[in-house]
Image 1 (cartoon, rainbow, N blue to C red):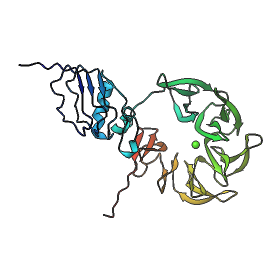
Image 2 (image 1 turned 60 degrees about the horizontal axis):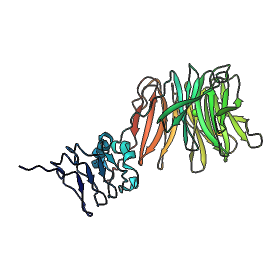
Image 3 (image 1 turned 90 degrees about the vertical axis):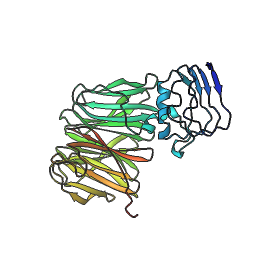
Length: 374
Ligand SMILES: [Ca+2]
């Protein structure tokens, strides 16, 4: 009987693959270097039984960061051994990314990252300014707040509150930039409050302009019309109003309204080539698609839509879609009860649609293209 007591193991320079039981029977191995070989992958559980490992060097290989290496990412998270940063050499979409950052991409699921405590949240909107991430959380009760992502603590911290005299019953938030400056606007649906624009001044957000007092605004949409910033406010008591940015005063001025459209709950815009369109959601009455004709929005299409609170346009590649939600029936083909928002998200060249519901769970759909020609 003999006893192997190997503490360090270095490998030759041109290894292209390694056997899954290559390190069997080396429980005392402390230092293992597979660095600067041509390894594209490592067999699952290669390091099982190597309880004494304190350092593993895997740098300088040709690792293809696909699902075959998922186990390695998990192992790096769980082991006590130090593992130097590994950079992916494939597939092309992951080139030079750090393998540790790819956990979610390997797992290919959305996972819970952080929770922000809130009640009666109406809207939650991210805003990036100078590489800092902010999240505006508008609540019906308890005031609305702005959170900032603290990268050292790896969580969101509360930065400031939003003026409760102006914002009493928030219904919508949009973010936008004009001439390099960052803004957000909160649509307020109370009679006493007022839709208000806030501006970032380097340290915090300050109220910049209040619009449309005494109306119960349900939605705001930011868009450029002929390259000029505009806001469209929808309210439950009058037709949607269009405001235009005045470069001189740096304020929005009322420009026009959208004719013959009462009871519009929300407006969303989209562009096809250089033409501008809007989807108007109505809870009672038909929803509509309109096109900007140079002076006014004019009706293009009517869609029957009793009970709709969301009419969301989105594009995937060259496809242009519009999803109409309904509170009275399930949205066709999407099994969402009382939908409130549809948000398209693109990750790793895959297209997802997040569908939030007032009555059920948020669901995530993936856009798939099925080729029926073969
Ligand atoms: Ca909006």
